[in-house]
Image (cartoon, rainbow, N blue to C red; front, side):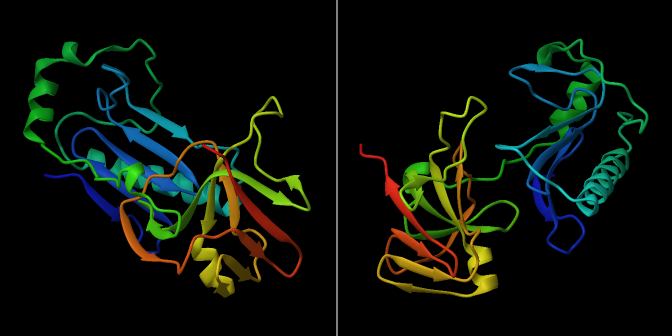
Length: 238
């Protein structure tokens, strides 16, 4: 069985990658959550003897109580899917993590055989070198973005990039949230985007990964105008 990217609940809120007999990787509420069976995670050639749930994001995430319930539902659904494989490798919903990792090469032979029976191909992402500064790209959750490049977001000559914990290092990868643009309505005039939503531009500490290109703007974007402010993208000189 190959790895599959699926809409878990059919409503676009949770996407999942299913690695049979090993783990399910969820994208939900701007978080990546990995739900794994014993021996199902590869941490640099090591793995856990127990089930595990790992949560990560590329920045501080604020979530609602509704999203907390959604996260819980998605995790429980992932556990049910993995336990339904009937391979004898189970996730007890009351499990404790065994932090004594072992090498993947040292996992029990029976588990190795089960893993070998399941071959899969990882989702193919577009290489960073192929991402243009006016292309519209879709991530694994089905969300669409425009990558402006490395640089700063200026509002009235003040930098509005996210910063690291020390308050000095800027997140330098700048994106337009294309789905929000379409939700609120937008127009483009040369290198200027006009939109009613003030939250369509943001900066990130790492580059986003995309699985497909779905369109292209008429030109690269230098400014974004909203009813409340004007944001200017200033690329980093290379």
